[in-house]
Length: 106
Image (cartoon, rainbow, N blue to C red; front, side):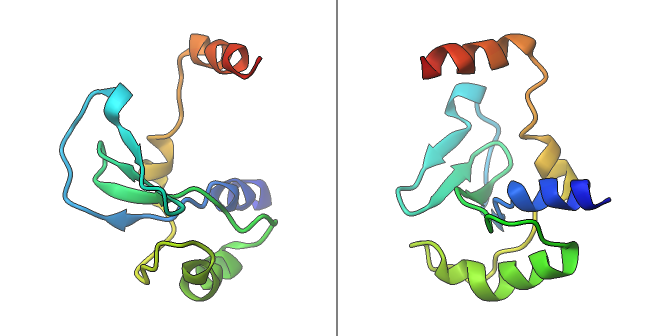
């Protein structure tokens, strides 16, 4: 269970709802230049950072509410932890994707 919580926290790109429409995958994300990324597919905003630690669910909720809003330039105060469905939407199942990412780093 701790690994699941750690995974959630490590990708704690906390969400804030915006109205959004479906867009092609290549246009799904826009870097807002303030520590956040807009996800046009889901109509939410993700943080580009996490808490950089291993914390439990209760600590993660506290971090989101009280510490995180001051950790990035975007001063929004209605951040929350992502839902399981939102997290699942980030998972890429295409094996070629991993190979492309490794090649791009070289």
